[in-house]
Image (tube, rainbow over all chains, first blue to last red; front, top):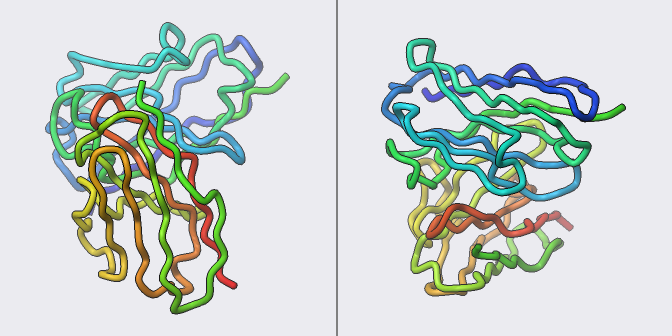
Length: 122
Length: 106
């Protein structure tokens, strides 16, 4: 069955960087676009970034544009999120999510991981 | 950007009750609406896609309806396992979520 296991979260100071990862198994990772979605404490869900199945196209909202970069290594079945210039408001549980097709317009969130917690604090 | 407005933010109901959650979009999203169930310490779960199509393994007490800008999620007979927070999500343009509805059992 599909498994998505996030890792790499932790406590980081404002302005610093962190990279989180998602190990995928149970499906052909290279066939599917992937997303990162986050949930701040006590808040709702927010889309963070999208990457196509081959990694050639990415999208992200203005709130993280220029600071966060999504990438993937299909040879390792792993999704990444490089987060730079972190802000206190980036504190959240970050979910890795699998779609049902291969391009950046695939926006149905079919399978989710359990998330990794990123805390930005001085 | 398409804004999603979900209501109520919290609801309390008894086991066996019929429960309805509403989601409104700021512009037409055709039928590109999904519903998700979130429980603490668990991976979120897709319940319904394209307004009314139940995801695999989802109990038939869950149903979805609507079109254009107004959509509903209905639980026909609330069960203890349905204690969770529910989110709608549009995927007509980029993707955005409602604010969530926390369902409590009386």
